[in-house]
Structures are given as structure tokens and as C-alpha cells.
Image 1: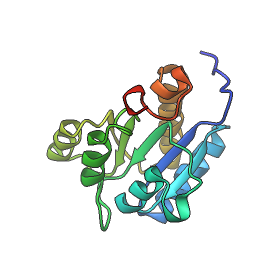
Image 2: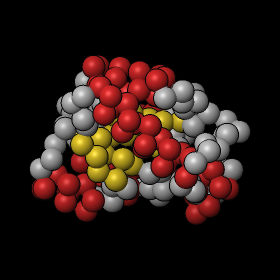
Image 3: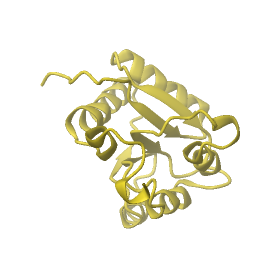
Amino acid sequence: MPRKQPERPFEILLVEDSPGDARLTLEALAENGSRSRLHIVRDGVEACEFLHRRGKFADALRPDLILLDLNMPRMDGREFLKFVKGAGAFRHIPVVVLTTSTSPTDIWDAYGLHANCYLTKPVNLIDYVTLIRCVEEHWLDLAHLPQAAQGILTSPEDA
């Protein structure tokens, strides 16, 4: 299926405390020829600051997609998921949990907090690159996202 050409680069927020995994995601996007811009924050606290455009994130653009690790310091992925899906201004942003955990409890809890998808990080580089390509293709090429469809930065109810 041909990739649609976005009018602007897609904005992806990666919430990940592992510098190695963050670098791997960046490299996977580059390997796949992505036009997306990856913004990396280390935990849920920084992710909230990014979404609210506070401090060093004052010029941040609203992400089209959030990739979220579960196990992080300060505010973990579960707490951040609860925040983002409970906040009217942000709840329509798709959140893909991308973690090493295969725990049925973690999977159940993530979907209970309204994660849009739960994926386990592959340990093999080739599989990781493929996974990131599939995530980007699904969420940014095939799925119709609210802000892309309407050309808006906030949901209509927040206007």
C-alpha cells in the first residue's frame, strides 16, 4: 500500500527512560525513511510538561502519536496514561504502549486505562525496526486521526 504524503511531518512523542531504547527508536524511524519527528522525554512528568508546553517544551508541537514505556521513574506509564486519557485536551491522541512487559496484568491495566495499543519491544534489531515501521504505517498512514482530519490542534470541545 502506498504511503500517503503528509502536508507536514508527523509528530511522535516517545516517553522512554532508556537512552538505548530511545536511540533504537530514532534509528528505526531513520532506517524506515520516516518523515516523522521524534520527541523524546524520560518520564511521565516530562511528557506532561511537553503536552502542556511548559518550561523547555514551550515551543513543543502537539504529538500525533505517543509511544509510551510503562516502567519509568517519577511518573510511570500507567500514571501518565491515566492523565492523558483523562484530560479532555489530550485524550484523542493515540497512545501505543511499547514496553518489555508481557505481563497479563500490565496488558489488562493498560487497556483499562484506554491505551490504544499494547506492544512488546522485540529484542532483535531487525524485528524492532519492523515493529516501528508497522506502528508508523498503521497510526500515521492508515488511521484517520482527529487533528489531522480536522486540521486542528485541540479537540472541538476544548475550543
